[in-house]
Image (cartoon, rainbow, N blue to C red; front, top):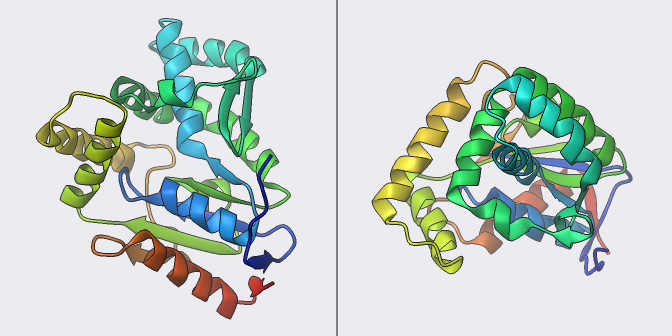
Length: 232
């Protein structure tokens, strides 16, 4: 359950789409915005990480193998605002490792995998949510009332990701993290099906030199002007 500590009231069924490359801060921003407006936040990247993690556990490497793995693992999975749960246990920490991130990028490039997960995401979003990922505004929630594209410089995104990994106890250099981010940028932008891109009607925010609260305040201000949220 999400404790409602919202300062704002959202219109019924409000969908807020936040897209951006790895390390842009969209996950943290999504959680903060969701808490402010009283909506659940759903991390689509975590969903793909779960499929990547499950495929690794089952030795699935091609699309047919991943799809077969999905038939089994999705039945045991619950995707909720608090994260991904399997048999009642939150496995979020296992999904934050770098090898899982690489696996998630691979499965995300598989068209049929994306098609199946698209329906999962859209069904959960019907009653309103904040959803972040790489193709939310352009593909998953094309009719979302609020769309944002969050970005930052490559080095700043690598620094943020490296700091996150350090907090998890991972032994990885900043240069290695930067190279990994650069590779993921290329893979996400060049994949044939649903590549990373800014939706035509999304507001772009470069957070390189911005604090989290500054980014959130800007988003809330934009949504207030559009009468999507109002002060409680």
